[in-house]
Image (cartoon, rainbow over all chains, first blue to last red; front, side):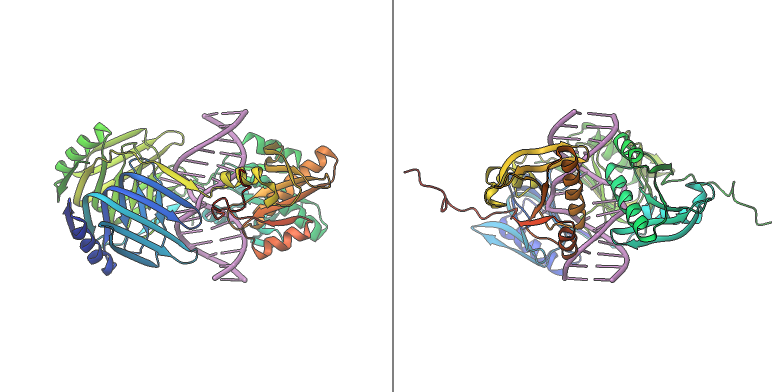
Length: 250
Length: 250
DNA sequence: GGCTCTATTTCGGAG
DNA sequence: CTCCGAAGTAGAGCC
């Protein structure tokens, strides 16, 4: 972990500092001060002079933060070309990107701080409770959806998209299961409806549709019933039962 | 613009620094160093020891950044309870939130820098090219979608969601227009299809459906045609024509 | 508060 | 590369 900082730099000092640390592509660089920011690309935006924090990461991603909100006021997820220089006596940062073609431009009017940080130790990150994990868990234990359910397939492709879980119930009827890691919405019900219709047409069999989620909105539930579909309560973050319900190895 | 910084602080110094600057709720606080981060709430995650930048804004939003990507590796959009203290000799930050119930916990293992910034001047921000603006523009000039179109309504609610633009064509047929500020996808086609079906059932009239977007994916176009729906090319960011086509005042 | 929808969505994965 | 869909989506607007 190294860091270098520059306080109240002159414009030319700032330019030199930025060039040095951005060139290498190793440092996370921040600039804090009064800036003007403009963006042209997928949309266009302009931010008048104001106090901002500009962060440029070693991978070329840029974000411009104001003093509230988790979302930057301006950003660029990736940069193909980074330019720093003096324009009309002001330090300017221009970040360009192809595909999509877009440009972010920051004019530094009065800078209080510029600093370069090196975050070296990469972090190992694990997430639990994604829809993919939920799907794996339910494929392993379809009983959690309904007793007697047998999973035939996961991510089964149809003409209208992939079915999360395709199964057969205790009575031998085909079942389409749509999973949501959060609250089930009308959108999810429509999705499920499309799959059910598609499978019905393809197989000619009678097909059940189940929306499996930890919760469901009221309108979605109404629509679900109206369409003759069903809801199953499943949790995205099941308690980690320390083998309590697991069959013993002996 | 004021700022205060603390280099290589001891754990107790860090705690004091954080308490002082977070308490006031005026400063944007950053901590850079080796941390462990865990989150439990809508999902659960754990990040092993690694170099991170933690940013707490005056509004209580928190984001934990690694050295790549525009998205934080962990975050909290809002915080109802912020706690800083020593746990087992380590400086710890705990951010809790109700609705949804979630907790972000950062353990500071080895801190290189803690700093507090005051971004005072609020920024004035304007964006051009949003879907809302596109909708307003097309409501004003429906000719851009199709000659002879008359807009009846915007954001017209149906049982399956709001119709962006509801109109009548030169032949008196009802038209449902679905807008996308970017490339039209299969999802947009499904959405349009639902609206058309709903309006057809509700009015008993024959109804056209138009997906208006600056582009469309190939599969979406195929699906659109198959469903008897149409595509209209409109731009989210029209060139600013300096009155060239405007009728003169005289 | 619940619900819906947009977003310069970002990000990752599959074809 | 395109296309699709999930996301701890965030955030705004409406009811």
